[in-house]
Image 1 (cartoon, rainbow, N blue to C red):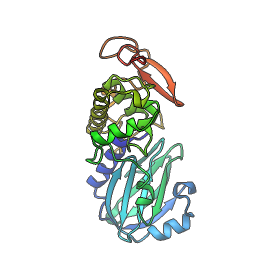
Image 2 (cartoon, helix red, strand yellow):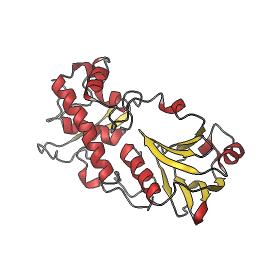
Image 3 (cartoon, rainbow, N blue to C red):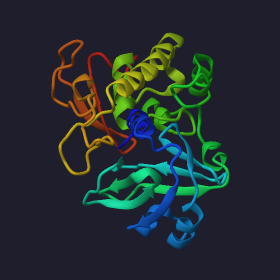
Image 4 (spheres, rainbow, N blue to C red):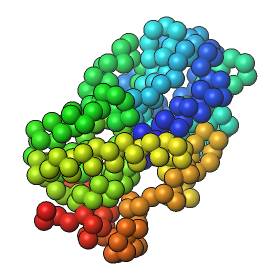
Amino acid sequence: MPELPEVETIARQLRARGVEGKEILSVKVNWARTVEPLPVASFSRQVRGTTIDKISRVGKWMMFSLSSGKTIMIHLRMSGSCSMTPGLYDRLVLKLSDGLTLYYRDTRKFGRWKLVDDPQIILGKLGPDALTQRFTKKYFRAAMRARHRMIKPLILDQSIVAGLGNIYADEALWEAQIHPERLSDSLGDDELDRLFKAIRHVLTIGVRNRGTSLGDGKTNYRDVAGDSGGHREQVKAYGRGGKPCDRCGTALEKTVVAQRGTTFCPACQQLDQ
């Protein structure tokens, strides 16, 4: 579930808690597949004794740049999070200098920590991060026009634009008043410009509110402090099927688009445009 705003929130909070500049004193991996394809012993040996020089993010990937020149690439997937206190579902634990401990928590075990020599092995396959200057209106128009695909799965494609997941895709399409099944090359310049602006807006607001948590279950997103994201009250579409549209009052509809649960307004986001 964690998307760009949630990953950015965690990266910022880890920096604020002083994780950058700390030496990794020991590594404990409680779920071996967390660090695949490396064996646990190899991952631990290569990471132990290095310093976390920098914590950064591109799309949904968080990166620990190490003093060895290698980088730990972290993808939280469905339920991953980081904490400075122990919990029931800790899959990986880093003992750091100055008495700090970093716990990687993942109830569903889908998240991965990949140790790489060059981040571009992964980042080179991504489109521009949606909150960087590389993601421009000109690029977005060209990328959408060059393809004949439904717009929602297209903006979810990380090779096209990095950072959007199911929540913020629904939110951006609602804000731009575009049906999720519209074909990308059927959209006019005004529609594409609205969607470009909406993508950047919903992600920016999501970051400002420390991400989105829509439930209280054990798999729901939590930040480093264990708190729910504050964006819940700002959600306009995702997870609100049957509730009135904040714009026109029509009941929102929930459907499935490209195997993803999708919520939209049938009045504001019409398909036959």
